[in-house]
Figure 1 (cartoon, helix red, strand yellow):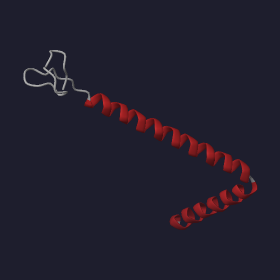
Figure 2 (tube, rainbow, N blue to C red; figure 1 turned 180 degrees about the vertical axis):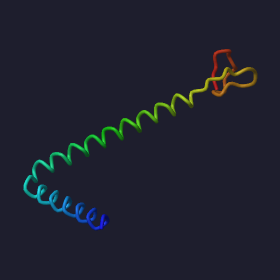
Figure 3 (cartoon, helix red, strand yellow; figure 1 turned 30 degrees about the vertical axis):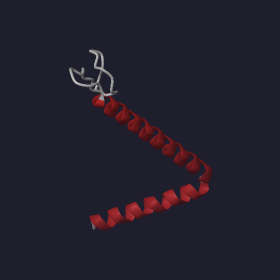
Figure 4 (spheres, rainbow, N blue to C red; figure 1 turned 45 degrees about the horizontal axis):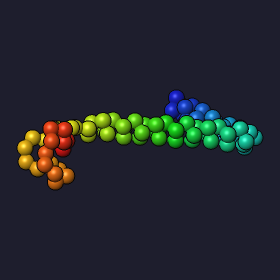
Length: 81
């Protein structure tokens, strides 16, 4: 009995939302575009933050001691690998 009541209530809510969507179509479209914009902006912000974190993680500077420097010249104490 409870399952039938829950299923009927959900179906009724869906039908009412569809009717509301047809009546207020322009408002629904504006809302959908707003939600899409929020999702896209936050996704880009997330990707940018991850890229910056990866760049910070990959920054390792080591002083080259002895041998040839990476550019083929004689090594200096300020050469980095």
